Image (cartoon, rainbow, N blue to C red; front, side):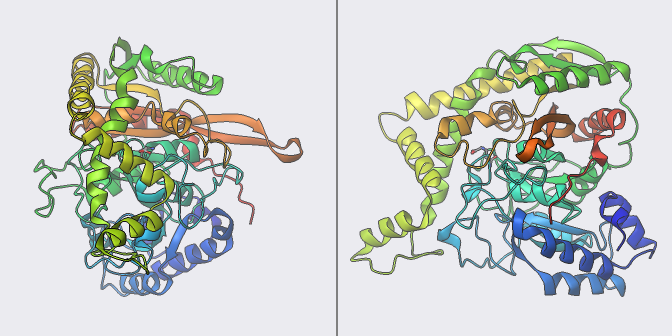
Length: 494
Ligand code: GLN
């Protein structure tokens, strides 16, 4: 398969397959070869479904499978359940876990004809911002293998960036799609809470988790969102809200669009390259005829403490099911039931997961519940109200996705607080349940070994009102169309 096809878009590839310029089997083989060549270093994948992918591709080629994604090779985060292969969540506790069912979002991808290449790496149970909290080794950033891809969906972001799949799914509880998308130079979208069914997504924090797409372009992300969105009787939190045609108007700029800028996101903590990218993005919108307005989000600074109470509280409850009896790992030499529970959990969970379970259990315990959990819920409401007020004045809020580019592997592993601060610009969208998209916004330059210049991608985020993904995608496309960074690709070291 020609390199141009790898470097084309998901839609371009889909069209080439539909026009029979290339067969789904050729495409699948080419991607599988590319995985073989590059994934030893990157470790974006946990498991590759070689045989299954080729069978699916053959079914596309002989017309047994069709749909808007027919033959398109995609990857899915390894916290999405599939009846085939393993679903590990990057945890020892689920190392040999095989799910009896498939996540709705994955089922919908397949029904649309996508070829699922494999499962991608993540921070254990999606807890982390670097894809280093992994039982089976970290993922590396394709732009600089010494650096992290971000997390927790780092495997999916790196896989798209390195063109070892044409698009991918991740999950975002506090930024896990947008932050790695920014650090890997791809588009990542967290939909409105309730837009995409969570059935079959291994729960981390159920009131925050959402599945969403990664792709090279806004239009590609729109197509993937289209396929996975919509009500599902198997998830009662999945909203019965009609799914518009996200692709149809995506190229049409939103006339008279009002872009909100909040001073709370333009802090001194931002790397100079991020500050410059933010200014550039504002200019891009001005140039496209947007009205730029100031908005105030006064409770922004409480986002991190609020998130880390709500998310850990929910996680401590959700992860209680891993008891050595019903799922996965069981400690081999337990003396009694109590010992079976505690040893299985002590040996099966990694440090970060244990830290979260302890924090969450503490916040929910009697005597502390009101002071921590209930108070966090109240602040969560204030954060939501900030956004409601801001969206009276603007159609989307523009802000950086992260304060800086990708950091080095190991740089923050001993400092959980520094790691948590990666989410400072992303967690509030989850607390408020609103959709948010990260788009490539240029590069920070740094030097690598031997003084070699390295470009590290940066991302800008656009946040919109609930269920306004259609407008959000069009606004994101305005930014993308003006800069054309979406075509930039890392030079991979084989
Ligand atoms: N980095 C955040 C955390 O560690 C967000 C993770 C996520 O969105 N899954 O909780």
